[in-house]
Length: 137
Image (cartoon, rainbow, N blue to C red; front, side):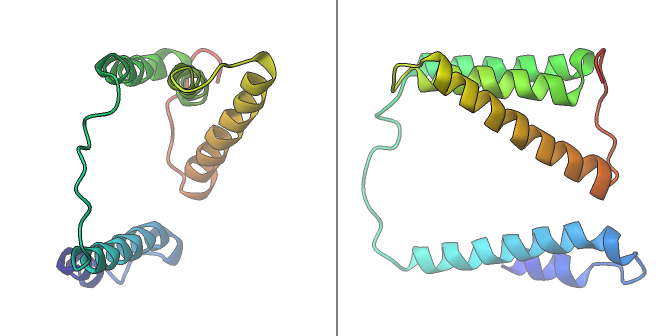
């Protein structure tokens, strides 16, 4: 909470209105999460083993997906590499809980494309942050 206040009062007032919108939103979100964590801290905590369930192999493979995604961005570009990595990771992690078929994968592909396109457009058009371009675009 104190960090949020520090950031809030250290914002330069000379910055253009649109340029300061994102940092202000992040500071407000951080303050809200701080308040929620403070409230949760006064509630009785549940005792459970967090690392009892799961597979170490899935954790390692997920880390490998992220590493490959980071390398692929330089060659394929942000959009293509992100769609490929998120779709592959979603499919891989979903196989631990359910049987996948082509129709489910097709729906997930459209969802992933929509999510990546949303963030791509936010960063490139609204925030004017250039994202890496690859061999496709």
